[in-house]
Length: 534
Image (tube, rainbow, N blue to C red; front, side, top):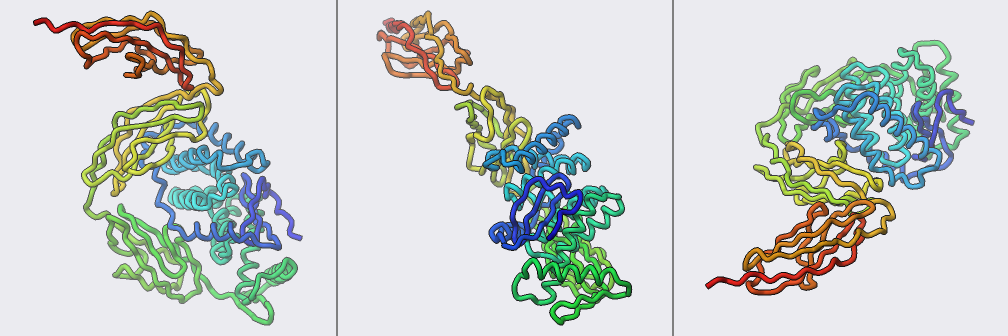
């Protein structure tokens, strides 16, 4: 029986492939299970094949980030609580907290760009589990790669160890034991240097599982072995590894494999442009590392991104974008990309943003379209300073129904983006307060309605304001029993124009509140437009 390693402290689990991935604040712990859960394994494998973004899109506006350490700590504590609730079965539908998870992802990206790795790591320890339990594999993998790249650039060892451990654990569950071994070995080395005993125990367990799967695969098993077979191979590997000698040989079903010298190849991307490198075992950014036998030849291809061009290789004796790299030692080939001259002009700032509460759980937004020299492709909507969602460039309205609380005020801004990735400044802020839950009380009836003819075509109305238990949001004006206008709740006058001279008109008014409750009808007021003087 496979016992849980000390310090694993799993809080929740999700079945992936042949493993149960137990997640918690101390990291993921892979437990072998007799049966397979294939859908999650397929979804995770597909996410691992995707090319992660160089950095999350929200970071383009990171200059606005002013979140204090106390505020970040509060958000981290909220993430901890969500993880505990999810693991304890208190969140029956994890989709209900998708908005909060998106906001935490946004915060993680901002901390990453600010170089606040201690806080980012604390947040990722909980966010990692939430993303796994909610099966958001692509978001999870992109966040881990972003953390790893930034932590490596800054030399932040604890974040590197965590990211390598998690990526290795995910690749183990997705049936990629060779890549899992690479990540977990790196995590193990860093944890030993840091003296992280708890993390090292969990990493060692997952690493043993990955090496076992790799050994079974190299032994050409035609089907996944049962638990007993796997443990026999693992016990044999441990016994052999405990012996002395320069080489280690594993005997599996009569086939002998002797380890040979192997080297790490780590591809890097540099320059002000964007691009990727693909080749044998490399798909960078995303999967930028490979461990190969000495003397192996890797064929690497540098592919420039949109509006970028490949310039040269560094750390590899290659003159062209396609580089046949012979590996005789650890190598770090770097592909340099620079931007092409192109569209650098951002769209105009969105204007006329309005926010209107429609219910206790809905606020409706609308704005005037931006202009661009090429074309607006989307709008990014922010709520209370954090990214809420992105809509297409043809959209100038949005219904926000994401985790809103009743009787609560929210502030919104909108930002336009174009096809080149240029972003406008954010729009002016619009605020709205959601209606009170269960508000059934209508406003009082408007009183004191007066009508005065001021010309041959205009009659001016005025009345005394109504009272509501929450707030009056609108007045509806009726002429001869037909609605002719709506004015805001803080207005108690209305000029009715375009009328016929020497004609009598009768008016009434009603009041509405945020919940859509409408008052009774006011007393009527009558006036006759003036006559044309000959």
